[in-house]
Image (cartoon, rainbow, N blue to C red; front, side, top):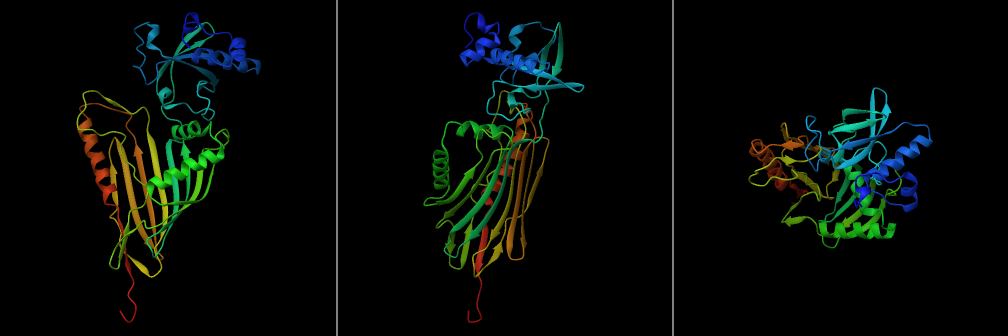
Length: 336
């Protein structure tokens, strides 16, 4: 609440603790005070987040900054912490804070510095699935999803006020939107308040009548594997600011229906550019299909002049996603 003096002057740490609320300056004050009590030095950091323009050193203007975080000395540099972000794992900055020029108020001196551009591991989702295709065109899907970085934060934030039963019910609604009539068999996820590991979802569900049929052919697209650009409209007048890179990886094992063999798999694709990388590979081994897909968003700021080139790469990925269909054909017996 940036009202009156607290909009410019931090509230004392004791008041923040007693009130149980505060803005970025107040929460930074509380964290710095708590670290001091533990014998750890920490300092205020003024930062222009990605919601505003980056710091211009030649203009001494306080309203260049729209946020306050904390710096802790670490080796030759600093560990930056954002205490306003209660659902993020320790040491991992939000995308809006990364790669920004900042001011550190270290005792009686002011230092220019820069927050790290990328914190390993990158933002994104890692997905491992096993799909059994039934003769009737049904799918039985078992999966494990691991969320990293900002995706981890997003999932924790979405589930922080929900009970395990509510979380399970939300996921059940999601799979029903992927495939009408789908039935959730099992679902477990990480406790949103357990920050010892990245947020994970493990689930199993059954989707009846998912595949299309034409005579002896059975064909389908793998559900929920789309990966593509954040935005690729026709034209842009202003730069596209994505804030940070991210990755989405799929690893999958697909078991054909009994009595069918693999007729056709999508062709592999590999797209490399300064803006994004995309790769998708289908392989047949021991009568099964193994699929691997990776989408990496690399560019974080794309100028209007670069945008048409970026858009062409996005279109290549989009066109491929629409054509990813797997075909099975019924195996012929001796009397056929």
